[in-house]
Length: 178
Image 1: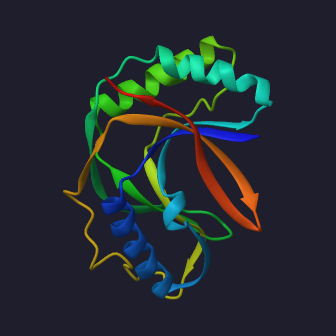
Image 2 (image 1 turned 30 degrees about the horizontal axis):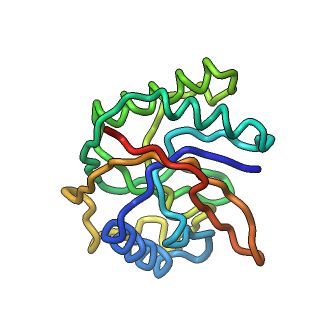
């Protein structure tokens, strides 16, 4: 099973980002765009795991000590790729977010999971392999993300699978922050 740990977004933020994705699609000649239901902020990507390892992931999540915090969005960007760019919405650097992610990574590593070693770069993927019709276009000009916030009070162990040809993410375990 393909797993990751994430912060799921509230409906207001999902609606806002879905509108940003609609604007991006208008400017794009192609790409794979994130569905509203799959919008999230990844904390740790675990990849393919045997189902018996889920208990170890849950235990690692349960050892994390973090209080609820506010997540503030901070604009858009893209990672340049040869076959089309990855477009994303960003979040402001937050000690609470980075502490949560660092603790989670340490607990997972202590439990024997191998994780990516690159620095954590929090972002919400809006589209992959995106090619803009006009490379100089700004698809988000009417959709400023700055100042939008949401409360974070839970982290979720998410499963990713294809159902009827559609990529679906759903929570298989959650830990409330206290």
